[in-house]
Length: 352
Length: 92
View 1 (cartoon, chains in turn brown, green):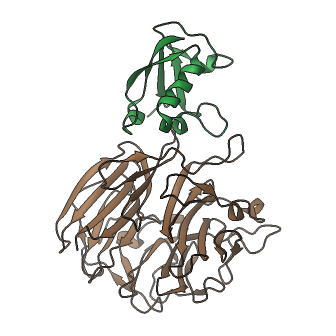
View 2 (spheres, each protein chain N blue to C red):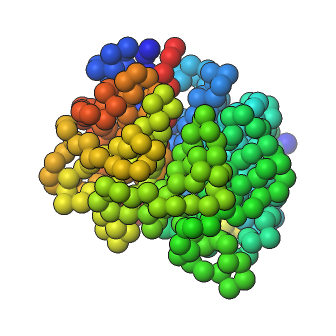
View 3 (cartoon, each protein chain N blue to C red):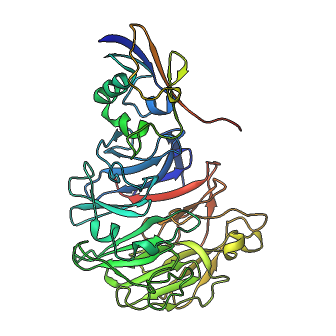
């Protein structure tokens, strides 16, 4: 199938289009030139939704049916007028069961029941009893990772930095911290079940209880929907990194480790993807075709995605603006002929 | 009401929903901005934040005078006045 990837950068979005072989790429853009494009998603109905932000003009949500004609939503996610909270960025979208969810900075969650035309705050999380103990990470106080149970519309997971993971079992009405087994990095005086710095989440669509969690302090897995977490770092060269992506066709996992939270760059200047084909029990380096020296960029939490084709296509962008693609499940890589602005997010869709 | 000119920054007009140069009918500076948002609702979130005021780094000039020099935006307008929206960013 042809593949389309929307690459969101700090100065606009770019669209990659590749044919069935995924070995020849056309790059179009920038869309939203000069704006930060912060997240993008193709919904189940085929409509693309994309978030922009600006330090001057604030955030907004845009929709398109063809990636060419865009319309800004007038009633996007918003904190109440006159309140203390300010909406600075929309970090992520998730769509399923007829709803679209948006995680934002200043941390909160919003939901739309009309294809993104209007948004309501998810009070159960936004006004959570632990909120007074929420502390921002280096990227701000942001709700950046969302998972939806494909078989149960009531179950939702939300990752907030540097707070942790919350799960709702009732469609978003109530939320419970799910951080047992993950070290707390910022301990709150009152609430002892938050203070974790989650970086990224991925989920097995065939078993929503199996979740992988990229954390500031390591790589974790839960087999019970987040009730308990265990370390899975056999073969990883470091504990630090941001994105984690799952190929739902094979169950293969992909991560991109960086050297510690102090340095946040490829170890020894060698950009390397790590892959697991056993659910995270072990990890193998996959670096053929990736820069093997003098590579000191980062890869941010939203900047890695897969196309779920056979073999799986894997795509990521870097803070140096480089794009790297694999059409053989990470066994070999190719750097595309472009240098974009700092890449924040990559969203891939296989199909017309 | 009088007819006044509004000049918009390229980033906002680049969203495709407001021209770079337009005319509105209004009595006051604030009224001109309200007329702008009424005509182009998507612009509102980019000019005003949760406080209801102009975003911190949005600059609004009335015939070249910074709107922040005034107590409020209810300055009476004259026909042919120009309101310019800019981003208040300097330095390199």
